[in-house]
Image (cartoon, rainbow, N blue to C red; front, side, top):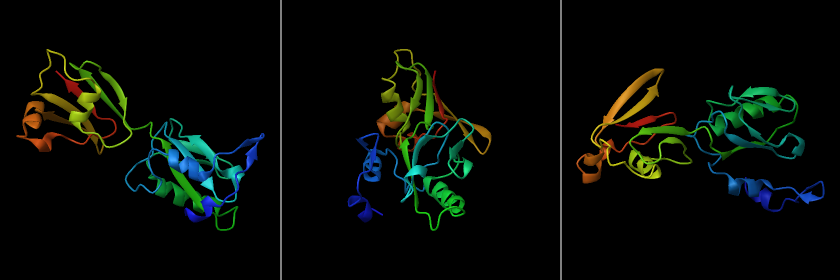
Length: 194
């Protein structure tokens, strides 16, 4: 995929050079070939259709999880990986273009949010760009207040439509007694520090 990009001419729009696909790929925070990242509402995607500049767009996934593109109108993007969305777009563009070559890049991963409340110095909503553990999110929240109960941290997580509560002892993680409790956070997790 990269060989033809390097020799590509840079088209001008309104007298200014247009950002090339290679430049957009370099700025993408989550790679397009990720088979694990799931697109969500508010994510910013760059959809490139080779040799079809009018169809290549940077687009934000709407709250309803859909995106709108020329020719194919609305399409559900949330819940799909970039590769699944690419395959779906290729099928839909196939009705209008001979052998479309489509790529999807996540430029901003805005849908991956966790919530932290209670006895930390900076409670709030944190948008995560990569894998983050419980210990790391506590650091991002600037640590505990002096009243924090570090032995009974509650993580509320939704799995398959069910709410699940996990109680974690931070002191055991730090001491090395329970390293497995340093959970990898999932989008939508709520961490409560009593």
